[in-house]
Each structure stands twice: as structure tokens, then as C-alpha cells.
Image (tube, rainbow, N blue to C red):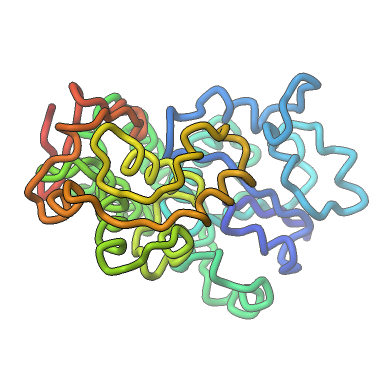
Length: 327
């Protein structure tokens, strides 16, 4: 039985697990910046000669069977016709869950691929598991049929995340999401990244301040010690941009971030990494006041970021605590 696995970035090691003939990692991000809706359509379509590197599903497949690479220019659904089973391996992290609900919504229009698809219920972070261990524990990772319940839950949640306000997502958290058991916690994590009512900062930004106040002055600790940071929404590079806003704005809450980062191009990852490593972080007096919930960051600094389909600005700042607060 020939098998293909679709997974998120956390599942890259599945390429070495021997669990499938082909492992296709979905590398797009849905938690930072405007949602890449046009890019998603291109990602699963047939390959275009004008497509940029990394814009097609085949660009990240590291191990090709001899009979498969010649079909890498096909659309995802056409490529999958050559396989008996398509397994969806997306873990509990927010971006993986967003990828999953987008993919399930996409599969609604492709019943021939949907009919052979199975959903693995993964209650752990794939990035923390070695490929060999995943293979040994396969019997403990349920594979379920994808029914109308999973499809409708995915559709409703994806449409809610696309909406220009977070209201529908808040409603869903209090509704029935049991068809996709990992989705509720992912939505809760995402909602926690909305600006708080008292500080104007999200959960990861506040955790940065807490850790720096405790003496963690190096960016490596903030970016890579996930169990210490205890937030799971953003990637390393997205964390860097959060840090920029906190340290390089008109009234910073953090001091010590290398000033050269103001001029380094966003795509120059090596130079950015070097600048992060040179940084020695501390809280400003204003930062200490924000950490103590005595000041509001958004009253002194520009806000311009995206939460799903919601564009957060100073004039349109949706806030979330025990309840959602309208601008």
C-alpha cells in the first residue's frame, strides 16, 4: 500500500521515519502578517515556471522515490492519485492546526483525495520526537476517517480566523470543537496573543518581559527555550520581529537589542542572527512599568500587525483577557 504523509514544519523528521513513500511538509505560516491566501492557492496547484523557490508543495520534499520525482510539477491532488492512503500529520501547535483546517477546507472540493485521507490525532509536538520513536509509537497515534464533522469544524474555524475581527474565534472557543481535539487549545493560544486590556501586549511579548526581568539577557533563551517561554505560536524569525517592536520603537520596553537590526534586511538571516547574538537585553523603566501592569505599551508606540484576518492598529486594537474588548 503506497502512502503519502502531509505534515507541518514540525514533521520534517517524518521523512526519515519510513512511515510513508513520500512526506510533504507544508511550510507556509498563518500566524504572522497578512494571511497568504493567494500563496496557498499557488502552493497546491500545478508548478508554474514563474513560481518563486519555496512557493510549491514539492519544493520541500527531501526524499523522493524513484517513480515520484517526475511527478513533482503536478498539483497536490493529481500527485496524490498515485497513492492509496493520504495521512494528515499536524500536531497541536497553533500554526500546524491552522494548516490543518485550511487543508481540510481545501479537501472539501477534492472528494477523490478526501476519500483516501486519514487524520492522525497527534497530542504532542512533532518537533520534539525523533523519527525512530514516532515509528515505534505509531499504534498510540489514532488514524481516523475524515467525516462531515471534521470538515465542517475546519470550515467554520478557518472562516472565523479569516474574519476582520476575532469575535467569531472567541465564540468558537466556547462551542463544540470536539471533531478536531487539538484545535481548541490552539485557538486559546492564538487569542492570548491579542493585546491585553491592561498592557497592550500579547502573551509572548509579556513572557519576554518576564524572562528578561529574571535575568535572561540573551536572545537564544527567548527564542529557543520553548519550555521556558511556554508560548507556542511564533517561529524564531517571528519572535525576532516581536522583539524589534518592543526594543526599537519610540518608547521601548527593552534595551540592549543591537541597533544594527534597524538597517539589516529582513531576508538577511545570517546578519540578523549575528546581531541577535551580540545583544544583551534588559528592561527599561517603562518596561518595568508595563510588566507591573502600570503602563500600556500601545499608548506610547505604534501597533501594526495582523491576527488572522484582523488588522491590529492603535485605532483598531482588539484586546483579549477574560473577555474580548472591542476597539
